[in-house]
Image 1 (spheres, rainbow, N blue to C red):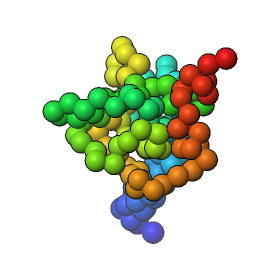
Image 2 (image 1 turned 180 degrees about the vertical axis):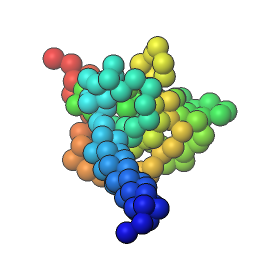
Image 3 (image 1 turned 180 degrees about the horizontal axis):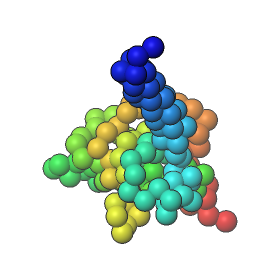
Image 4 (image 1 turned 30 degrees about the vertical axis):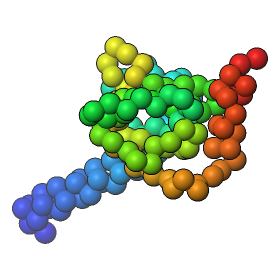
Length: 139
């Protein structure tokens, strides 16, 4: 085998290995529940990740350029600033967002809602969210 062919094969194999490792890394570390994100805030820094939580009832504040709201999971809350609108964002429903924490603040800056649910979507967790946060999370 010629030296040139060996170099080309090495470059191709290296690129393929990089793509597999990157893809697996994104799949295993990209998603966090709100309680996990709060616990791992320092290590997450400003890296992009997906955040899951239940929209805290009464927290939605619509702005001209987006929406501010709070998500909660296992009694841990994360304030969210979402750029853009979302007609499906309602109190007590589960959402998955894509974005990152804002440097120097505990606010999660979202630019994409990647999981949208209809008004009829219900899980045990979203039914639980219908009770007040204080009722579920305060001793």
